[in-house]
Image 1: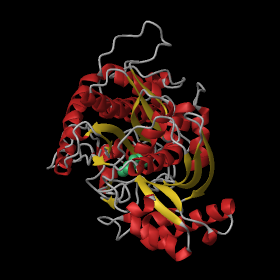
Image 2: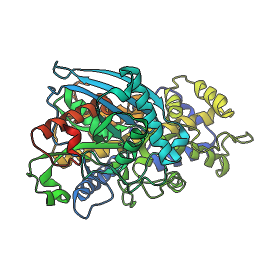
Image 3: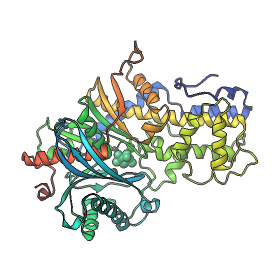
Image 4: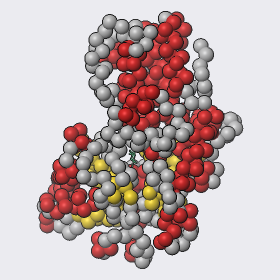
Length: 494
Ligand code: BGC
């Protein structure tokens, strides 16, 4: 069978029999391949534009990628110490941790509790969201420390993983909600006082010392144990990256007169790359996702890559091929379950790609149990190919972002710390991303397959727990040393 574009890494069996598929199904499969395959020249074009957009985001005029300074002004040495609370408000879960950075270099102890973030809170009322988070924190403190009201104030690193303007490390003005959140009255405002008000109401003794993005946390946590770590990435419900820039290359901070070689953590918010639609080869399915999202026109790159959207892209394809194509996918079957928006998450696609059986019978089971649909053998072939195409496109586009930061910073060789459900659980994501990076950066083939790539994307340390604690520690340290840049409430650092 001829495939368009680069050869996919081995992904089990099952697609071979597509050649026996009815003509219309084959035609639709070819069409999907054309829509979703991104060849190497296109990857290079996207990367080139990405590099320019990173620079533009740092300029006074700005661009579509926010490139938010984070006031993380150094890398960890491995010798940081102390006990910190960390709160992670992710896209799916809420996690509270107590992290102790021990005297032993690069070592830490952690205790943590995880809470599901109820779906209705994501599109509900702000006070309820802050109230819920404060309740979880209170419960955690009471479980581990007894009566919260009798204690001194704990320093807290708050991982708030949404684009936020930070004029100070202890401030975060929400630029816009992402990842399907839509809570009125928060965008354009500093979330810290809102959160603190909920804590005060409950008498929870916390002083917020740093508001952190998950990518910055990932970078710092990974750099704590690995000095080669230069970029932190999240490929999960959302996607994004952070790296350290020199203040001299950040014109939008020029008015602060910081020494040009001072390091500054930048939360890129690269999910917003190409919002203006210049280079990304968007399909009609991507356009449909955007149109029906709470923030149309925003997070163009993220909507092609992140876990929140992968299953939805697949679902839209399936419905379209049932309703509108000559292939009449699932003809005569009731597809009402499939019609429900966001009913398939990326784990559904993972399961399809993980089906190693020749007849794709695991995929058949999945469709029967989850959707009440029984695809034919040929339809199963198309299903598998569609999942591969969506997953491969996500991995290849992700590599453009990593390549762009590396080119901008002149990194020839480094480590990239990555976390998130797609990176950790989606089959072949790492291998496909690594292959794309090799193609973009024109690396020669490896002599030995075990050899490291010049730029290697590795599983990261826990960014929102250990990373948040480290950033709180680094900030306390620099304040003690007299660096008061980007500190709104110095009293919280005593
Ligand atoms: C957010 C980022 C975050 C990323 C990964 C995106 O939707 O805007 O702040 O880092 O998701 O969680």
